[in-house]
Image (tube, rainbow, N blue to C red; front, side):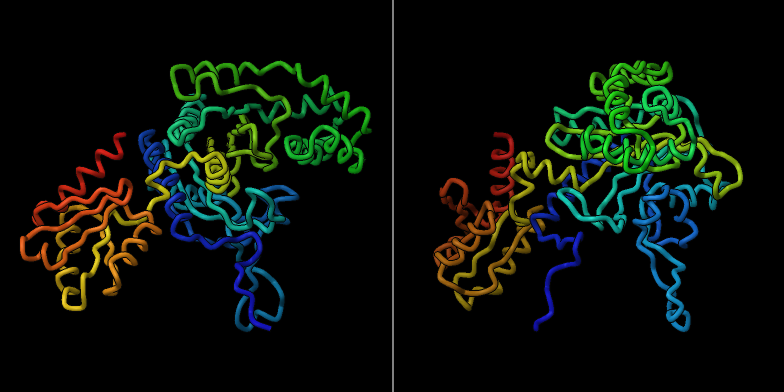
Length: 430
């Protein structure tokens, strides 16, 4: 039986069009994050296993991809390393490691892959990218307001108009569980939050059923609690955050959601999540985690962060047709044809001239019939094709075919690059 050529379940190969879409989104993310003063950071793909264990709660620990010891220790079946689960815990380690080298208020962004041993589903993968911003060193609500503005600007720049940022406070959740669900015990509340965090995925009936299965409360009590908690009052601290978000891209998009739980156990204050109507799950989320760095440093350091899920953003944008036309187009602005075997060197020379003129240029590698070469360019969505046959060589010109209109014009060879650039500019401005 031949070896399967499919990538592992929950992972993907990215073909050129996929990569262009990803680079488009990442480019917007980086530009916006840097406009808000966040600096780039990268960390290793794997961490010491003790760095990750115990930071994500009961269910999170189960989803960590462990790396077995190697060499003479391989037979033990023990793990000493693990693929990073998120970008936040590695950041906390970095802050502890380089505390004397970082500024008092450290703002970083990080765009890298993470891995989770999760069950793959629509928009959910085992290997995926996160686009994080984090602010270290301040308890001010200005931090949250700035982050909400930044992620909102990323999404509006990408073309999203119908998203909402749901907001809650981690310290409000124990009150909610006690008041509406009669769950008072701290250990049971932690377990209940894992279930409550699934509300947008499994619905009220699913949450009620799971709470009963976990023997945390009765199904009837859970359904009553879910109904009554809708009117739970917004904490004053969150109201101040929303007020600070006025006159920013987040204005009018932030709403209080008493049911928002966020499954990770390290959150200590405000928690946030972005949702759109046609996606089960979120486009991203985050919150304040003032105790996490202290697990490495021995003293608490204020911290708050937000993570956008690149994969889910791309899924929604693809389904909605939100990518600009140039993102799906060929990597080349023009393709140089080869008139005959004797003109190969001249074709390469012309390609070099066009590249020096600022164009992205492909060269058809064989002296095929011209119709085949033009058809190939059309299939690749190359907007312009150049033809330099015997007549063009004799007159020092190049024929340029606009593949979008079918129009073909002749231009002096020295002006071909500027001619194509001007036509590209006209088209982009339409």
